[in-house]
Amino acid sequence: MRVVQGMTDEKTTTESFALDALSSLDGRYAGDIQPLRDYFSEFAYLRQRVRVEIEYLLALSREARLVRPFSGTEQQLLAPLAEKFSLADAQEIKRLEHTTRHDVKAIEYYLRAQLARTSLADVVQWIHFGLTSEDVNQTAQALALRDSRDAVILPALDNILELLATLARKHARTPMLARTHGQPAVPTTFGKELAVFFARLKKQRTLLGEHRFEAKLNGATGNFNALMAAAPQVDWLSFSARFIRTLGLEPNLATTQLLPFDNWIRYFDLVRLTNSILLDAAQDMWRYISDDYVSLPAVSGEIGSSTMPQKVNPIDFENAEGNLGLANALFAHYAEKLPRSRLQRDLSDSTVRRTFGVALGHSLVAYINFARGLEHIQPNEERMRQDLQRHWEVIAEGAQTILRAAGVENAYEQLVTLTHGKPLTESEYQTWVDAVSLGDAIKARLRVLTPISYIGAAEELVERAVQDQ
Image (cartoon, rainbow, N blue to C red; front, side):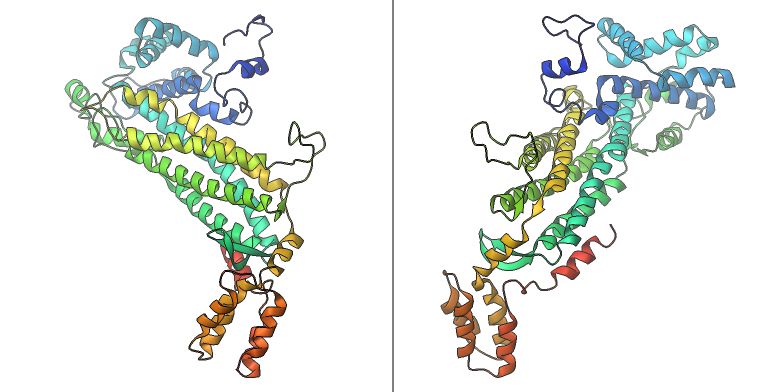
């Protein structure tokens, strides 16, 4: 950690580091993205690769039987190398990397040194046996993507889904003026609008949870060359597949030096679409707040403007919108960059892959702020009703459809004459109904129509959408 000017090492705190950070994720939003550090920080990446190397060494003994059996005591020596991996351990690897200029070789040398002082000194030559760096790197990153999804990303989405479901149910019958092309349209309900976002996000959440991450362990060109040359008696294809599966990942045997990143990109595309849906919802919320359909409570001590004392701004939804855009820009770059690599590989993918935590970090900040916004909003039912009462023209759809069902040939044209490009009042609508040359039953059906009651099956649709939540 760099020392902030004027501070000693002892006085350098997490807060001062946040003030000095270049990235907003490590600065302003450091608290929000803290859970992701356990998966995507440099420390976490080193620790996860140590874990893969240890698991591989154990598999060479247990499965391939190339390494002598380990005693219980020796297995207890190996496990803590990953489980109790410390900052001092990471710093030692980085010190070695200054010389090697190769991070995976530095990890190998670090592990050799750890075992050299134990009864396992005779097996150090089996560390990283027959592997290429990407066997370790990509397996470690696949684990980070899976584990961060399960522990951080999905719970954050589940929180949003729960909030949306609660609001949708509560306001399933709260009538609201809908808008198409920005213009007053057929009424809906506030709950139904939220239920649509819920349903869209629920599908994404299911797909995200079902995604199986691929990894590979097959050497420098994906052909098991070194492994088969050194130990042809081992069925390396089966060994590789079993090893990857023991880590809870899906093996991919058809690779070059690089695992094709198509599988990971499919996951990122799922997150990107999830983010786009949330961005759509955040923008709609912003508009509802602007139209006073939704109110934000004034919180004591909070300031909405440095000059306008009355302001209460939709900052949570605006924050979410901005961070979702940043995250999706990175996800789009992954989809563009990672499927391509020059021949067997080049290193340009490596630096890009180190930003996975950044993309997911901006996503997480957005999820937290979007949820916070949902927790604070207060739908203004009276304001919604007032707006509906000013726009009786929005029931013209229902009126002309009733006329069509009654056999009136120019039904649509009648309502065009009555409403096209102009507002309609309740009294004007009732006067038109009185003049309709149809029976009392049809007139009664027309009179039942009001902007507030004309909500169709909105309530039932809400319940169907959120019934499993």
